[in-house]
Length: 113
Image 1 (spheres, rainbow, N blue to C red):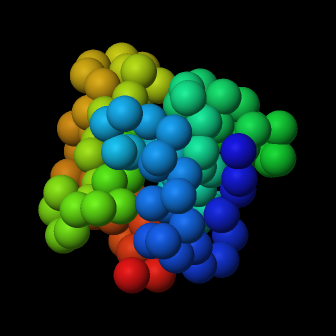
Image 2 (tube, helix red, strand yellow; image 1 turned 90 degrees about the vertical axis):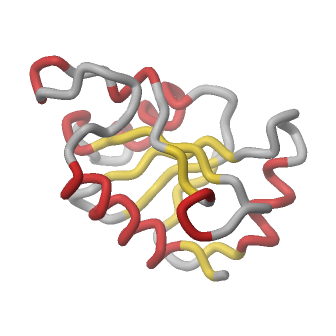
Image 3 (cartoon, rainbow, N blue to C red; image 1 turned 180 degrees about the horizontal axis):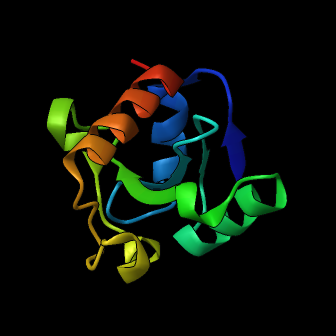
């Protein structure tokens, strides 16, 4: 597991994705601190790592990165940690469009293509 605070390359993400049959890298993004944790079998483990490092759970959102894909296919909004009725998110996706845009912006800042 790795907390990304500065640019990470797509090549490094591709190496991480080799351990998953789906070719993905699980990630959790902190929308307040604008960092993300990557490279674990479970989003929950990445969430815990970020919380241990000062993040608040309500700011953490799970995504999947597909380093072999581009544009809108690069990021998938799908994680069990996203199910939060108290934050008006009742699915594994990210229902708020402005939040999805913020997540994409942060990922764009942290991943060097």
